[in-house]
Image 1 (cartoon, rainbow, N blue to C red):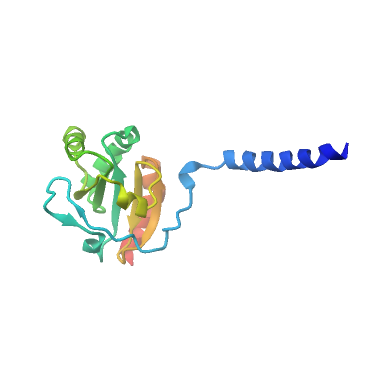
Image 2: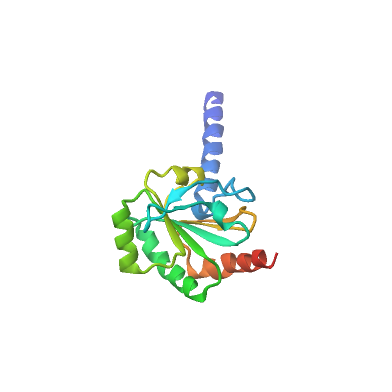
Length: 175
């Protein structure tokens, strides 16, 4: 009888961990980058590959950095949210076409519209690794000092934009 108690206890502990883990929201994975400087990079612009962009160019501004790809179906779902936000001109939105062919990214933006102030191309995905990208889409809110203040894993919905991102943008812009 005693030889069955230890395996049973171990099984129950593992089951408890699995139960708790399954109840977690995968879009609320804490990022170790929150409160830290956004990783530095220099990437070619999607539409003008001879020109470069770096987050250093954004010092002194609050901005959104959206990681997307032409092959991403969830990106299509969030795209109208960014189109509307761009029309409101509240915050500059910079995009990063992630692990994508340049021509595919350009065609996707022609088809769906371009809400971005500027788009860079990360064909190899190296910058995405530095930012801890789990998958696309992901969006980062970066403050005037270049510090990441929010990371949205998955699509930005109107609710997420209105309840989390916009209030934080207003707070950061007031500082």
